[in-house]
Length: 195
Image (cartoon, rainbow, N blue to C red; front, side, top):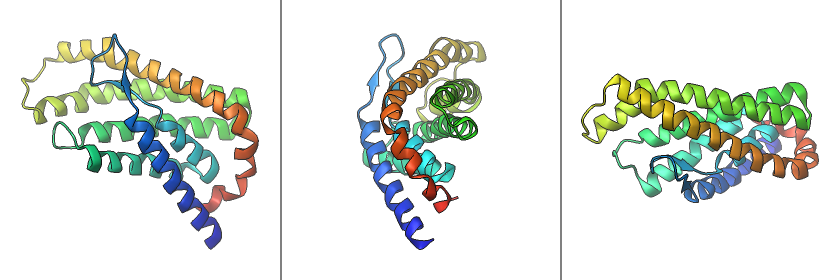
């Protein structure tokens, strides 16, 4: 059991580093506000979840955001964006993991990624409306937006952005998964390493 735990911790550390680097390689999507950035840092977290179990995926998301917060900081001084990124990552990775775990096929993985995308997009829209967007305006000392203004931002920017981001990650991950699935499946014995 110790060997598995060491292998899991080393794997989580490596995947967290890759995830952090991918987070730095973010880019804006032209029609959306500049604070909404696309990155592919959820892919290593998903790989960690598939190999070592769901807790490993959560740990990769957590470590990536802690590293980014300490290395790049936050415009608000408070890690509101990092907390939002962490929650969005979990909302994407966990449903994908659980759906794939039930179906165990490439179609199952695609279905899991699509389900993960829509769960993440919808819940993040609700969280942005009630918590994240108001927190940003509070910590940036900006005038508070009215409920209809926040609703407009959520419906016209945040929801479609998260759907597009999730679908782009789905596309890239499926290209990797087609090649990596035999290797990921061979790692099965390590699933119980960290749960």
